[in-house]
Image: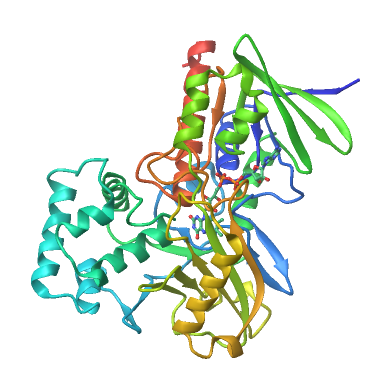
Length: 440
Ligand SMILES: Cc1cc2nc3c(=O)[nH]c(=O)nc-3n(C[C@H](O)[C@H](O)[C@H](O)COP(=O)(O)OP(=O)(O)OC[C@H]3O[C@@H](n4cnc5c(N)ncnc54)[C@H](O)[C@@H]3O)c2cc1C
């Protein structure tokens, strides 16, 4: 016979989307269980120890002074993130910094663009931000080419969007790009968690536990249960046992496609399944992690232009030496394929990223020793959906929600997007509970 458990809210997955929702609801008095299949929490915001280096499972840099920090403040969680300052840029083989105001103009000038061209593009950007947002149907690359034919200018936008939004200029809708810029309100500030990105997950998990919630690791969700289109809970396996968890609200952090599979797709309406299939394209990326004795360059984050796939290089140990054994450095290089919608050859992408690193840093092989190389796709992608192509947080099954980076609000990416989904769903559940119980 199955073991049984029950709670007010069952959260499937302990990524930052699941934990943000769980922390908010636990603080509000809900009895929450979080079921996580891995032995460690945090999902793609976690840390793996490798030869004494704090290697990433996803998140490297954490946005500060934004929605993530606000969430931590709201639930009383410790937000231990060391500010990193603005990134540097590699343009035309030169490393340069941009001023906090007029950064885009500065970058285009650094690329050697003609002053008239720069002014035309800047006017178009100002118009799109403050006058009329261009149509959703136009890709950012095509929109830019109306104002400039200078490939160096396009390359700057390519580096920015592929590093931050995990998509290419020719695939990102210009509408989504300007929504992102609007939400950003200037230069993005970010930092690193000294104890590794997992510390952020642990900090939210502490709030869940301190407020009577439970986090079950090594606990795989096998099926989401519903009756007459209303969610009833899930069955999970833990320590070799099958457990049936009853819950009137289920919040899934495992990605919309996996949620649909667990919900036994036959019960989901066909238009929803068609939308899932046609709309949801994952953002696939490659990340290579290296050990070094000395930093390769004098900053913690370099955005790289003009390469075939490499877009950013992080040296988190310049800010948080704790990420490596004493006196050593960790380098994380990230790249995205030039066509996000085509089948992705992981090995080829790793080779391309390595070739770019060797071209940018001529003595790379003698200075950096490869620790881990990975392509992030399938169940562990860069993001479950490309920005602007997310699913709704509500599923067709009543009281079954999705949170995480497959359901981000427009204009959000990565961790801020994930946290925004957690806040949105938690507030909806709190509000509905008040309606149902008549609480003030
Ligand atoms: C290489 C890489 C670098 C990145 N860098 C950054 C960055 O620097 N900054 C940034 O903001 N974002 C970054 N991102 C994006 C960021 O990592 C993700 O957007 C975010 O962590 C996703 O969180 P989530 O809650 O949506 O999902 P996840 O973190 O994937 O959490 C889902 C959880 O569900 C669990 N799960 C899945 N199936 C089951 C099941 N059947 N039963 C139980 N549990 C299950 C998984 O184990 C996982 O723990 C990066 C991503 C990658 C891959």
